[in-house]
Amino acid sequence: MTDNLNFIAPMAQPSPQMTLQQAMQLAIKQQAEGHLPQAASLLQRILQAAPQNAQALHLLAVITQQSGHTEKAISMLAQAIAISPNNGLFYSNICEMCRQVKRVDDAIAYGEKAVAL
Image 1 (cartoon, rainbow, N blue to C red):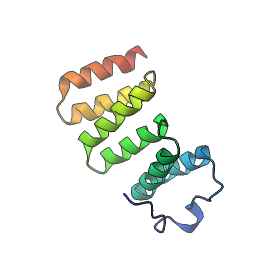
Image 2: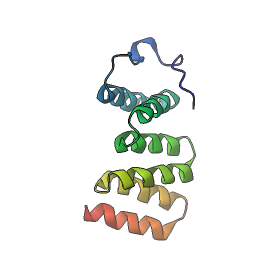
Image 3: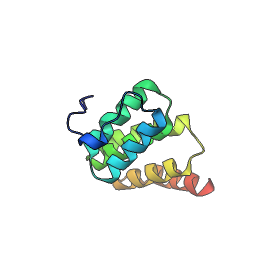
Image 4: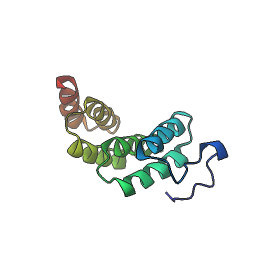
């Protein structure tokens, strides 16, 4: 993905003064509205500024899966889990992604961890 924000609607462009939290909220909004390339680009910028931002990595993984790259998304979610190992949503999402690609044993393990949290 590029860092080009020309495709973002003018009212949805991040400002240079935007905090990471504000940028994250904008990325969430863009993803919810189906503007996946724009959200992914913004999330990549967030991760450049804050590489250990597990929430940004998680949402980028979800977008990656929505874009048809489930194995890559699983890898990204595993990274988010390594950063934030007590987030049940991360385990729930990686469980479902593993199920989709027929990694049943992994799906069961992640699902059990999600329930335990």
